[in-house]
Image (cartoon, rainbow, N blue to C red; front, side, top):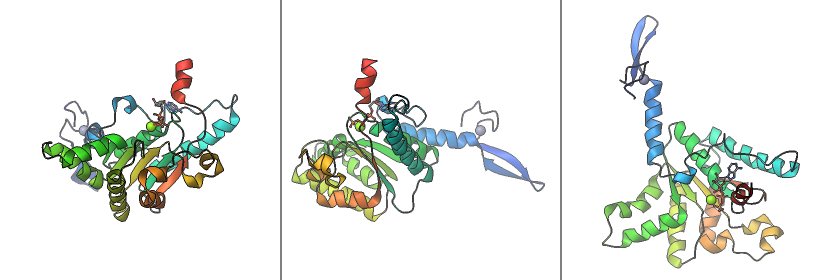
Length: 247
Ligand SMILES: Nc1ncnc2c1ncn2[C@@H]1O[C@H](COP(=O)(O)OP(=O)(O)OP(=O)(O)O)[C@@H](O)[C@H]1O
Ligand SMILES: [Mg+2]
Ligand SMILES: [Zn+2]
């Protein structure tokens, strides 16, 4: 509610006439302010605060029609997820692909779209979340650290960025498994990104004997994640960061 709102004068309510009766109704500015506050609290890093569907660029069609086509398919799948949120079949979204292919950009665009529709969501970098949870076990740390795990469990929508980055320990695997299991059992949406190949993605990924998602988060978390998420695989279009730096 801005004081300057010409419709409601800043009250957040407007009077409407219906069938000769007046009634109070929420002014559009009320929802704008509310979703603005949710967005401000979502913890999206500065670099990604302007990432949207509108400013996501597809590879040039005349130069590379195959990459254009493949990226358009991924883009439309993600946009469809955002538009239909919350999906009845699978509540989550998992973006898999090489570094710099726009996974975090699209994940944030999705979070933004979902918040604009009145939902609540938070952004957590995977590593940062694990560090905060671990710090929460440390008696000397503040209450806000102890809350990290709670927030990640209970947030209506959790954006978990760069899932599986970093080393594995039993503690990490247990923590991620319980977080994903809890959210999966309660059908709480996760939007996740990862640049780790999945063993199921065929010879291309497995052939390189690279570290897979399963190696990093464990079989149980991986299995639940796939069960609850729409999987979108980003095409191999090269690193956008490097391409723009070269321009
Ligand atoms: N198709 C695109 N159109 C516009 N900006 C893009 C596009 N792809 C990536 N970017 C921008 O390039 C930068 C890198 O993209 P992003 O961080 O989303 O990649 P990523 O796939 O998450 O990489 P990583 O695996 O390293 O996390 C960001 O600033 C992002 O906004
Ligand atoms: Mg990323
Ligand atoms: Zn108003």
